[in-house]
Length: 140
Image (tube, rainbow, N blue to C red; front, top):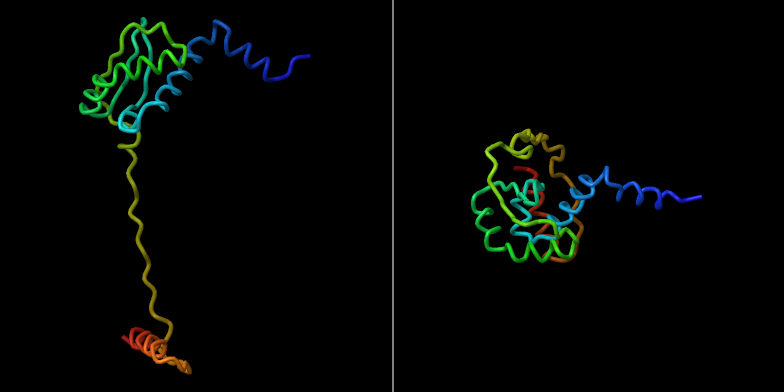
C-alpha cells in the first residue's frame, strides 16, 4: 500500500494539476528574488509562455528590467524552462494591504495610586538620591 506522500506526489504531477504546480513554482521564484524585488511583487502568473509579474510601483518595473538575467537563471534552477518572455506591469488596483485600515489604539491613562510616602533606608548616597527623585516625581 502506498503512503500519503506517494499519493500526493502522483496527484501533484498529473496533467490536470499542471496550473497548481506552476503556481507553486512561481511562489518559490518570488521567494528566491532579492529583497528589493520581492517587496514590490503582488503576484506572478504565466500565459502563453510569458511570465507576468504584477508590481505595486513603476520603480519595481524598472528594477525587473535590469534583473531579467537573474530571473532567467532562477527559472532554469526551478525547471520552468518553457518561458519565452518576461514582462511586468503596475497594477491600478489597491492591494489588500492598502485597503486595510488600522484602528487607532487609545492608551488609557490611569491616575497615580501612590502618594510618595515610603521609607528610604538605603545607606548608599547615590541610590538614596535616586529614590528621593522617584518620590518627587510621584508627588508631582
